[in-house]
Image 1 (cartoon, rainbow, N blue to C red):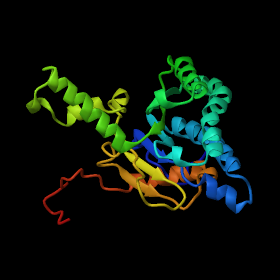
Image 2 (image 1 turned 30 degrees about the vertical axis):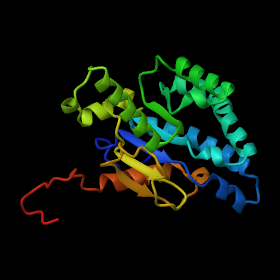
Image 3 (image 1 turned 135 degrees about the vertical axis):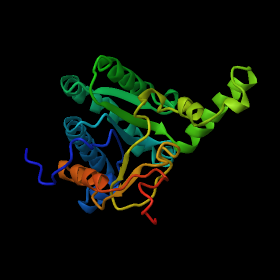
Image 4 (image 1 turned 120 degrees about the vertical axis):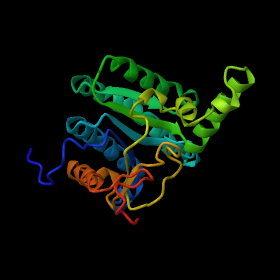
Length: 251
């Protein structure tokens, strides 16, 4: 497929994270139940996963269900907990063919048994894949993750496995749920769909220097072209990580 955007394939972001927002509003605009929006969004996940893998992305992290999403109606939560079961049942064979490995992070012990079984099976079935990691944040919250990390580090200090002066950013990185994604544990690019411009408790530590890209597009309408455009925006950014590229730079 020709690349109209002239992407620099030597500068594809290693880790792309996406807040998949707008399923409900997409359905509402079409006078459909919210479940229809979530189902359409699941199909978008399949499309974008393959596109990201073909572009050379190393990790694709998708915000699938937050620790706050339990506040939604029982019927919607029940449907959302069934989605991973349906998704993995139909898509894991394609993931194996694409050499994509599934990883799921979050408070998985709180998931319904059927959802947990589907998650565990998908990770087992793709464990030998050596290509892109498709990382789902499921029952995940950034603040809760940091609290859990602090508790784990405090326990190490209490048991004399770690001293206070040993604690640094590397220590915290290793205690977070993204540790297994190293060296690509921090997203280079964070995309949020639906026009909202907030982080919503997602990867709060990890996105310290991520490039942010917000699009008006609802997640079910997000396409290959939209992903490539976000990556093009990323490639046009000057990533200095707090430093300066030259003494002539007055910013």
